[in-house]
Length: 361
Image (tube, rainbow, N blue to C red; front, side, top):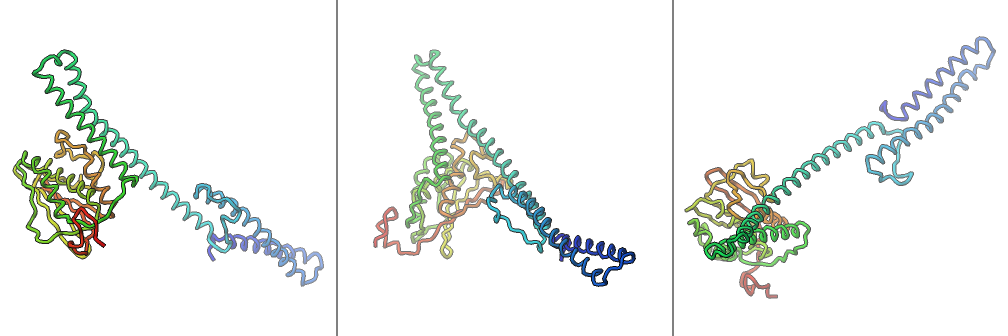
């Protein structure tokens, strides 16, 4: 029996009182002729009554205080008398100490998380303000210049209006990406899972980005020729956005005259997609935060490159909605590789109307 058990405290108290009573009776017995049986019976009776009284008092005392303690720990969830049950033979003091320690550790974890969330919120607001401030100031400058007389100058008025239009377009992209990211986070965008050829989709995305890649003389290509379709089960439009954002990212931060290579690996029920470039690369210390909103690597992520700074965050949320993962490998000066997985479609491609169609029953 542990010394911290309430029953142990009751036993010790009642035994001490029994011994005191026995000694008292023994002393009195020398002066007053008492029956010998009373010498033993009286202490035992006192000890029994003391045990019962101590038991009830100690139980009530400890129960009331532990009930208050557990109510505080459990945030007021104890509503009835039976919500907290105490057994006198258990180490309730030790259990309360352990529960308090666990509660303190949980609160400390919550405090750390709240601090991290507050830091993220402040960084996010600062980044958002910076992203919007740049085009707003540009628009403001062009409009003020036009109002001050440049509007009458045919040589500059159209140029300034076109530049203001581009700044407005950039703001629109930022707000659209923010709106889409918010919907993804609250699961408002439904994922329509259907089979399609990921190789065909990647080719379409690469073709749509060909002109932008040519501006930097970057080659977009597959690692090899794929004879058969690479069939996956996913939301085609969402995965198209994933590929667009990743390929755009590789072009924006790739070296002039470089290349971006797309690879597919089929293993069991999974198709793995790799997008590799030989661009600037990313310092490993930045990779854990790479998919945060507006997060940019100082050395290589230049805001002047364009984009909303939300592309990778959207990619992460889309893949999360598919219950898939994305990872990054990168070496400074060598390049980066983004890898994500999709569920493999095991049916026959011939059973589909097209990669954009539905399965024929």
